[in-house]
Image (cartoon, rainbow over all chains, first blue to last red; front, side, top):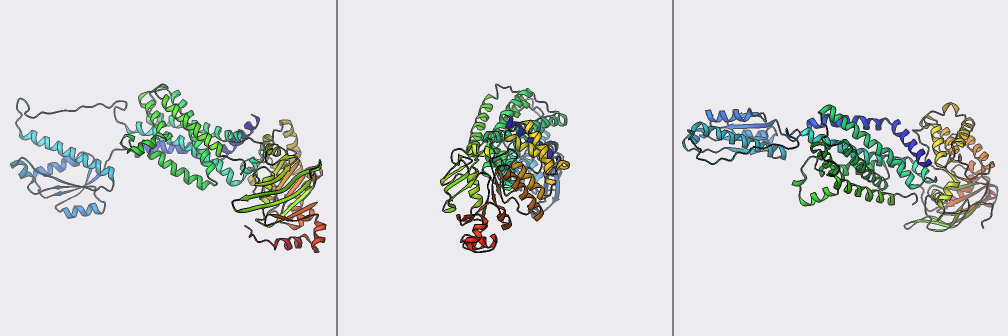
Length: 372
Length: 249
C-alpha cells in the first residue's frame, strides 16, 4: 500500500505539472463539445442547384421558385443548356441538375403528364442522396398543388389517400445536438482513458525510467495500478466537465440519473484503461503508440454508431460493433440522457463492458513483463 | 566458488537472442566492497550481462548469484539488495530533486524518518540544498549524474550497478563522481561499473574486458598491463578490442 501511495503521488505530480495534459483535460472537451455539435449534423443544406430550363413558361418558373424557396437549395445556375450545367457539375460547382424539357407546360396541360430530368453529382454520397430526395419531395408537392388547382374538388375524393402523421419519441424536435453531444463525450472519455494512459506508460519506456522502476522491488500490479488509478480519475473528471458543458451550453439534462452514467463510466473506464495498457505493452515508443491509437480510434468511432446507424451496417460490421466498447457507452449515454433508462435497463451493457475490462486487463498484465 | 565474501558470482552465464549469442559463457566473481570494472567495446555484451545480473533479463543458460540470491528464482530479493544506474538518465526530469529522492526511497520501502534525515544529509553532501525544489530537468548533466548515483545507493544496497555513469560528463565532474564511488565502496557497497574511459579503469580494484560476448581478460589493472607488456590500460584495451569480429553499435 505504501508503495502504491508513492507511485500515485509521483503520477499526479507529473500529470498536473504537464501543461499539455492540462490542456487536453480542459481544452479538448470544451472545444470539441462547443464546436463539433454545431457542425457535425446530418441535415444537408446549401445544395448547389443548376436548372436547365428549356421551357421558360409560367409553370417552369413556378417550379424553380418553389424549389429555391425551400431553403435547402441554392440556385447556382439558370441556363438553357444541359452541357453548360453538366460542366458546372464537372467543376464541382453544382450538386444537382434539374432539366425542364421543352413543352413542359404544354404537355402538362394538354396531356396531363410531363417529365422532368434530374442529374445528381454523387461524389458526396450523403449530399447526393438527400438532395435528390428533397428535390423529389418538393416536386411531388408541386405536382399536388397543380392538381389541386385544376381539379374541381368533388364532394368526395375519387382517389384514395393515405396521410401519414408522425411524432418523434424521446427527441421530439429531432435536435441533433441531443444525439451528438453524448456521443462526442463518449469519444473524449475513451481517448483520455486509453490513449493518454498508454502514451504515459510508453513515455516511461522511451526515456528509460521504466527500466529503473523494473530494478526496484516495485511489484507489477503496483506499477500498473499506479498508472491506471490516475487516468481512471481523469476520465471521470473529463466526463464531469463534459456533462457540465452539455448542460450549460446546450441545456442537455440527462432524463435518467447521473449516478447511472457514472456507474457505467466507472466500469467502462476500466475496460478502456485495460486497452491503453495493452497498447503500451505492444509498442516501444510514443509514435508507435500514437499511430496505433489513431487507427483504433478511427475504427472504434466509425463503427460505433456515433455517426451512422448500426442497423444499416452489413452483418460483419454489425458483428464488430459487438466487441467495440465505444458502441456500448454511446448506447448507454443515449438511453440514459434521452430515455431516462435506469441501472436495470443497462445491466447487460455493464456486464458486457465488465467482461471487456477483465479480458483486456488480464491480457495486458500477462503481456507486461518486468523481465525479457 | 562462493564464499561469504562473494558479492557477485557468475559461471558460464549465457544469453542468446535467436542465433545471436550476446553473452557467451562468462564466468567471474566480485568480492564484497570491491570496485569491479566491467569493460568492453560497444556491442561486446556488457549491458546484456549487467541486465541479467540485475534481474531484468533471464539468462539462457549458466549460473549466477547476486548478493547471495539466484538470478533465475530470487530476482525480487536481488532487486531489494541492489542499486542500478542505467546508461540512460533515469531520474524523473519533471520532478524536483527532493521529489525524486523521496520517490525512489519510498518504493524501496524506507520509512519517512529515514528518508527525511538522509535526504537532508545527501543534499548537504551534494551541495544541492538551494536546488532541492528545482525540477531535475533544470540541473546540469554532471549534477544530474551525481544525483542519480546518490539516489541509486540511497536505500543502502549491498551492490550498485553503474552502466557508463560518466558518459558525456566533464573531467572535473568525473573526478568528483569517482570520489563518490570510492566513498560508497569504503562504506561497504560493492561497485560494479562499466565505462569507456580507461583512466577510470585504472581506478578499479579489478577489471574484466569483454570481447564479442566473452571475458578475454580479468585481473587488477597493474597485472593486466604486465601481462600484455604495455604501459597503460588504453593499450591493453586496444590490443584486446581489435580482435573483435562483431561491429559495435
